[in-house]
Length: 286
Image (cartoon, rainbow, N blue to C red; front, side, top):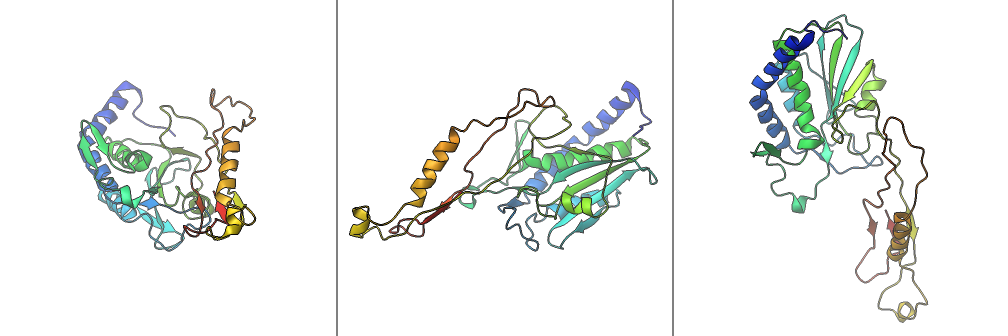
């Protein structure tokens, strides 16, 4: 992709344009943070018709239109719409996608007081979803705004893609999967997720698994449970599984791309078991 503002002068001009809009950009980030979009779902139950992303798609769509970009809603359902916009040479075949997700990780509603405040204090924005990844979404938009203001010309296109349903595992065909399967095939893609100060050419993969332990249910007041004649506590058995997995040493081949990094086993992240306070759990799932 070719840009007609080469050299230090061009970069300095763009940097000044970014700085000039910085306060406006911060205000937009706080607006996104104040629009909750927690995603508590899993790949198994991520819904098609529940507006998980809330008002975030609308806020982004309206901002893109305000800047003069031809924004569009695209998606598998009206309740879970991705937002896309292109900028650059109309006939440009070389497309670079800037991709980011609009949902955030789930939040315990009982402990969420102030989590969506978007308060700016001591040069930092506080609120759930700032880092992952609403600040990045704003950065994409205001980077293009700076390029437009500086009248930068490129031989290809930038495709801004704001997608749904990443936090559930991105395995349902609602967000990026939907775009790829419906004609959106950029030559390259940049994803501004947190985690590294440097641009990497790949990302650690993920493998999710569910373990179900079965026991035997019995009322805790029965003498048969007291004598250990009946009943088996599935939660206790799951605790043994968890303990064993903590000591698991995963064999792996070091990556040249991610030097010094190794696989990480995080188990469990969610656990369910037990039907009542006076009943021995006959199943535990983690």
